[in-house]
Image (tube, rainbow, N blue to C red; front, side):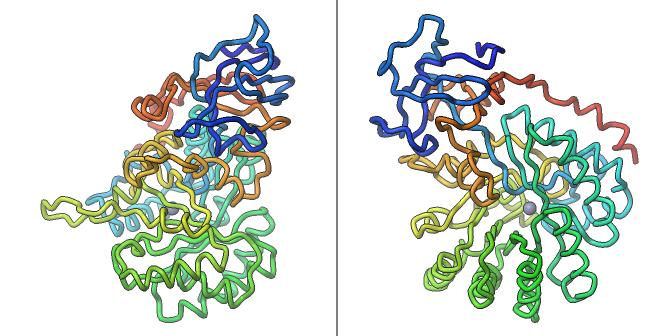
Length: 433
Ligand SMILES: [Zn+2]
């Protein structure tokens, strides 16, 4: 359907108001408008309202199919991905995930193992239409010395297909060993990465956060936190991070993931936290599929009664940038997943009510994470921008989000890519006990 010439015209494409900066026309109540898009030399050379200019006879009529810019996945763990067959989560709990992953990492994560699973994950993400991806890298000693060089090689190999960002991942208690942590921060800076930490409500949390911010300032690093991935209402590290950002005068980007406990806290506490998060300029990413899987799992034949996600609507109303992302794939933190951001958006729509109206929620998987990751021109369709987009079968939100859209066309640099997904059997030899 999309010619392999790199130069052509698409007629009757359905584009979304929130993802087409600079394109002004009358959008319908779902945010859609029909457009004619010219592609030349791998870039979008014009976007016009459908029928405003004469459509050449050789234009490809999309019949009102939806076109979205390629996805940006700002929170993943491709170093952990696909270990499930050899290391399942015994009970589906967060602690079960932590212990199983820790044991697998210590026993199995040599450079080849990490590289092959990472590459498998990236091929899936690419086939589904992802253009940029941030992964956390477990950086507990000695893993940082194994995974970071693998990541740097992978980033070069994938440049031009998927823009890769790495964030280190250690529990906040690891910051107590300042000499080691400062060395890690230096290593992350050398790799042009992001400084990442998992916060817990340890007694010295504020002091440790100050040290994390000091290192980020020293090396000019952005920050990325896993915070409050629990139903415990006493978990208020999101607020502590916001406070630390304010009193340290931090000017870089900060992305905070999860923030599950916020949804369980009393309204007044929530308002106070959100005020601080907005003032500190934090961005928040929710991981709806992982949260649904791990949160409110009580065992003993009980049914979960809580979706696990944080307060994205309240945050967005206050101007806090909000995103959703994949998180884990086929590892003890989430038994499923394939880095398909359409699946993430579909699930987010259902779990988090990204509908009625849809408004600008599509930015949560495109333009907003692109901004957080400092990727100019990613996550939008614009004249002069790269022709990196996905052509779906769906012509409306209900059509788009009702089927898996396995037959979507992913266009990169103006050309349709091969969307073959890697075969699970490729990893079989890594899964032998
Ligand atoms: Zn995560």
